[in-house]
Length: 250
Image 1 (cartoon, helix red, strand yellow):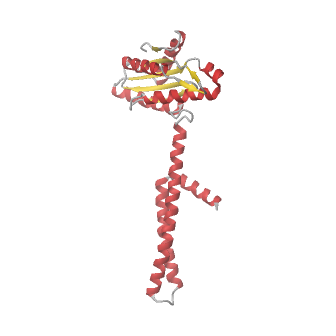
Image 2 (cartoon, rainbow, N blue to C red; image 1 turned 90 degrees about the vertical axis):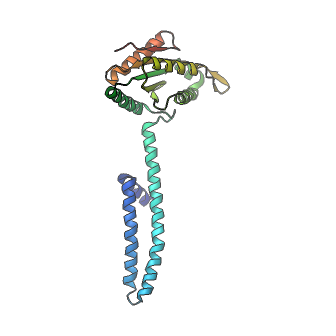
């Protein structure tokens, strides 16, 4: 029976929620009609009234049971699809967008900015001395820092902003409509918020500072925009860390 359920769920997943609902509804109706016909055929000697009552009661019992199965399977399928979508777009540790998704969103926003002429900026953030944090507090301590940082950054984004984990201890902001001045103000505000945050881990206080590189869209491909943001980030690190640097225009 478990094997049959697995095969059925796999089939429904292939069809998708919409078509699975249509198919199972059609099967439910067909099954009900077949039961009615079978009872009518098997009760040829009985009165028409008795046959009708028996067929109606039988189909009335079977159809709700099958409908319950339908709703249960569709619900499971829908939940599984939601989970798969989340797994494909969300970083499991920090619960923000993963690298693949944040790059997709950056590409989409860049295309929109190129089309509309609106401003667009990206900011790449890197945790200062993260290796030292891991060495001192272990990887679980480092994970706590990553989670806290992600929570605070996401909390202070605008609704139209996008934020994700770019890789390791690097994170990316995609800032639609933000010109260089607004992007720099935003990045500096984030830097200050993180610097003033006390992260406690096993009774130890972990200091947190970040370096941020900013680049604003200047009619270029995404790779070039990100390269300029990366270069600005490394300039911030070379300049002593715990600072923000804006890239020069392309």
